Image (cartoon, rainbow over all chains, first blue to last red; front, side, top):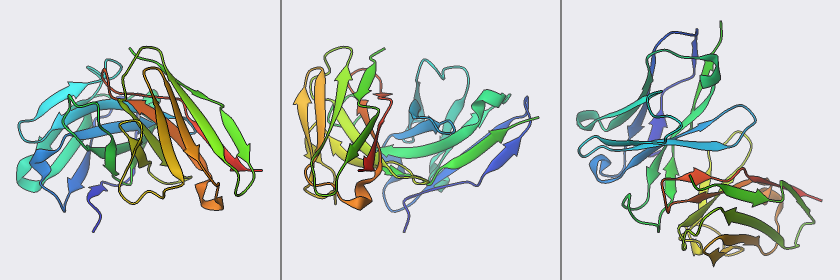
Length: 123
Length: 106
């Protein structure tokens, strides 16, 4: 069983909205922070933010604050990442991932990863 | 923002030889560091957390060390399946990734 399963690839035009999902199974969804990580084509990893599904407490990287919105639906163990107006620079692979420890712990890592959702934004 | 700098950008190592990857933090981060392996077309995989603790199922040839601002990931005997890009990430203040080191077979 794959713990984090993400929605499929998307092709969008600039200015369009988008919501991608991350379905969790195999552990208690509300007890672990979920992170989102972007990887632009041929580039490295960028941390976007974290959300705690238990109370939907969301923390955003300064680089992504105001650019995306994270949410979670406890009833279906699913986390979401959404954009209200996409830009070409949003093109990339988006991974959801599970944070191993509590958010304030330095003994931490992203120990489970989804397969990634490829988002292409092009006119 | 804490900047993580990895070196070298590319590392070529013969099979069975040791590979040593470095990660430097712009500020002291205690031992709040993780290492990941990403193979082509795959999601990253957690190798090491808390600078030196191997994650579940990670082979013993992978080891991490360091504290403060200087960290090292060592692959004691490189195998062909270790060809990948390796990233460090700090968890001291927010979370930032290094730029990655690509490991290839010489």
